[in-house]
Length: 320
Image (cartoon, rainbow, N blue to C red; front, side, top):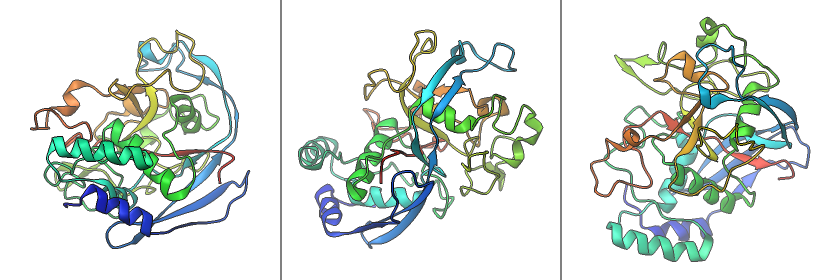
């Protein structure tokens, strides 16, 4: 795909959006976005996550627990909306068509800076080769291989399209929603033998001798109606990774995140072992995530062939 950044901006101005009317406190609403070169529509559901307190982190006795998952401490979360599923390629491709630029790197940076002055949205470069879907198909599958910067930029685009302040969830919000009132290793209990009913992971994701992502919401949801919080793709959160974050006493929200710092990803993925899918397990971007990118310098927007990383969006409870 080759779409110039300013052409994408014209599409954003010229195309409308629609969403189901939802007042404060509504338990669920459907967002429908219209965009892309062909003015296609794509929808996703948001569900209200009730506010409350919970114990964030894993207890000392939990199997496969790592040091950065503690010490466990009480955190209070305000109500917020969270997407019922991971962002799908159906939605993400609209953003990609409207914002991606195929200009040379220097020109792309210039155009991106110009656009940021207008609407705050950067223009990502086009994805290397055909790795937007890894040739697995679009319909219902999660967006993959996006850097944290790209995920955050998608949220800005979505906010511009809808008038709602979409963002990535904080790490505390994510774990609170994943646990859904439980204190066990997984949202369904401690028995990893049941994981296949709720998640796509290393043991069950293979298709045609290749581990793959799968369409969202094909497994059982957690107690709060959220799908794929365990597995399929890891999900970016707002927070910068710090191994001692819990010991430092951070309660809620990011600690001054910077664009190029390693950010936290949660939930595990289709290529991970069961232990990585635990509710309290923490992952973060490592240098090897960029090794498949042949470009110099490496892309700040894409993680080629790293189909295990995606995103899920959040929104304040008073919106819409």
